[in-house]
Image (cartoon, rainbow over all chains, first blue to last red; front, side, top):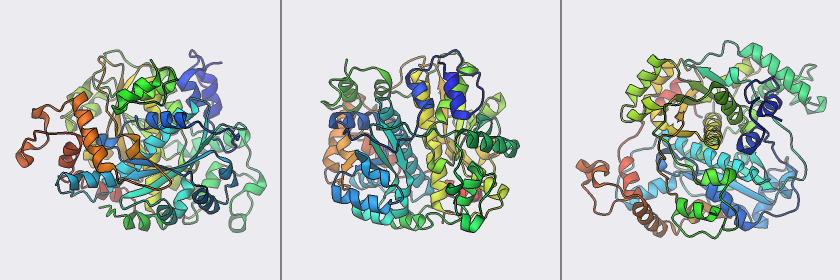
Length: 276
Length: 276
């Protein structure tokens, strides 16, 4: 099998790229990545956890500021609280490990104080740097974990409960959750998310999305053909009815037709960010 | 050599974790990652570029929304413009490839319009989702590239010129640059960035940074011992003088003692984000 075969499965399109490269190593694992929501009871060895964290935090960081932190949730009472908040995802309880990846601008501010310097940077840029650092460490952790046969599922839904979560985990000012992550050895293979074609996501010299609408129709069709949405899983049928032709774009349009996490901005501001 | 040896080099601390694992594969590459600012003239084959993009966009995405886009800058005139803006980094001109990784909330909004749905989500959350998606794809691209012997350097400095860059690359409303990335085959090994100890970045059940100040002193010392800052490289000596004991924390405190990218928030708002 070649990398082209994996690219074809991921994008649902015939691929020439990768036809001469065999499907092994890091690239193959990244292309074949699947979310994991069904975990074996086997725990993750503590030594391996430390190696994974060491690898994840080796990732690049904006200006070497290292503005990401992770809180591992091990205490059963705290895990139970979080699992109750995420009751729509009952499988979380079966995950051996649960972590919260946070943006962390607190250390940068403590350093300014410790070194006797002003910090005239109450900017949106500063907030984004911390959020992106957390995303980078999250992605590095996932790649590291999957390279040794573990499975993961990122949970942005934890931000629906940002205020309670910050209280539960004692997240101080300038620290905010970006995503949760469950981790463990897969009990069953998860689903493979088909991706938009690179013609839509990779541009040359100028952003050009003139072909988006046509590409979207094809993508919806390919995705539904590979993994049809059951009629009963259509989102919000009371409001939008049941569609004969349903797909990714209809689903995403329905998802964001309702305000999502409208209070997250207020939470981030309460954590100290002026977002100027 | 074991993974523990690589962890020791990265963190400057004796490591027990990883002592039984040999230093090979994805974990070893991630732990040994170095930034690359010196590229051989050898171009990156177009087929490989496509494989790297395919692998990078296979990474997880918030709610499968896929809110990241990349603009490859190939046109020599456009590259020259960007290189002039980043004149403090003359090595960029020698990089075979230059890309701009963007947060992209535009497709999500177009989908709402195409599917006839409202979009009541002018939130900070929405902006953060797109920024973090871009960071995740950036990190996935770097890991993919390094796994085949390529070297990279992320460039957040492109955001110092966000408005001009958006004009040059025709970034429309709801699209914003998160970071640039240079890519090529390394001509010389880059420097290894030592990382804060995991005792500072990984917490258990509650965020606890009571040991930060002591850990910071040790970290500054280890980092300077491994790679001393030349006296001439101390930041802003006119304002802060020349310190006998200089280190990471003094350097970062000096960097952010001056407003950085104070206009980025205005740029993002002008791109359409209300950040509620």
